[in-house]
Length: 158
Image (cartoon, rainbow, N blue to C red; front, side):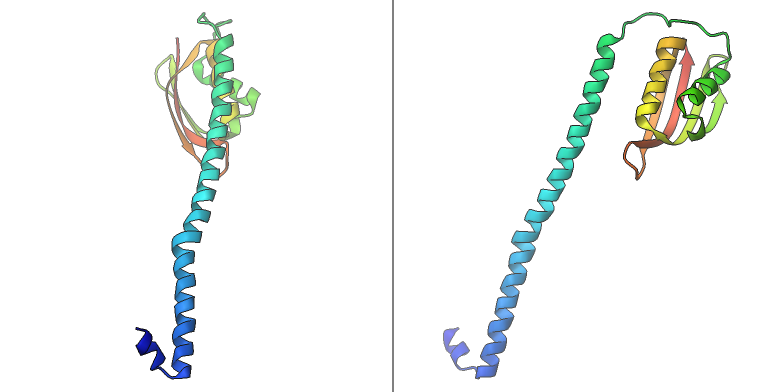
C-alpha cells in the first residue's frame, strides 16, 4: 500500500490524503459524535418526562390520601346532562366539549377537544366526590401542546 502511494504523483497524493482525512472525519462524526449527542438529548427528554410523571403521581397520591370512600356530599336532582354542563362551565371546561350524549337516565358520553388535563381531572374528582358521578371509562389522546388532551369520557351516576 505504501509503495502504491509513493508511486502516485504529488497531485494524486494530495487528493488521496485530503479525501482520506475527510472520510475519517465523516466516519468519526457519523459513528461517534452524532450518536452521543442524539442519545444525550433523548435521555434528557426522557428524564424530563419521568419528572413530570413523578409530579403527577405525587399529586394523585396526595389526593388519594385525603379521599375517603363515602357517598357524595350532596345529591343533585338535576339531570346528568345539566349537571355535567353546569359543573364543566363552572371550572372553565365547557368550551372544550365537542359533544355530550345521554346514555340512559344515569349515564352520559362526553367528547372533548383541547382540554387542560389538570382541570379535567379536578373536574372529574369534583363530580365524583360532590355529585356521585363516576368515570366508567375514559380515553385520552395527547396533543402537540403539553398538558392539553382530547378524548372521550363515559360518566355514570352511582
